[in-house]
Image (cartoon, rainbow, N blue to C red; front, side, top):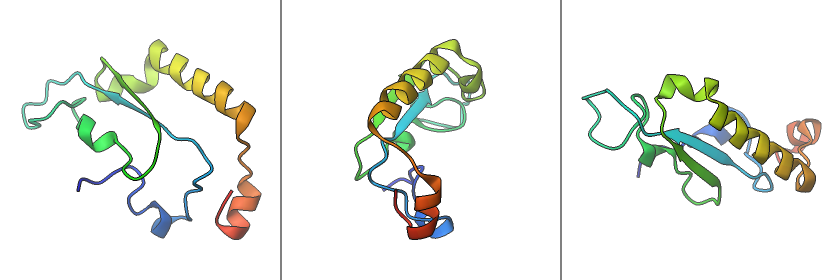
Length: 101
């Protein structure tokens, strides 16, 4: 099984609350000849799925370094935050004290 963004997170920081929704945005434009799979030049798209947990997953036609600067990515993030903030509240103090949200 490939590593996912949450592999080892619980051991390094704290348990990631199952009550929080996740969103992953992956690019699929690459000029990196060393990666055989669809990738963004740094990360293979297959590595961006969080196994064992439902999550929002978007693949955009961008290279890795352009993801944070893309208007389309910003729109996805804003939409996710606005929709999720209405239904899920994240209390960092509570999470730090007992390991869950």
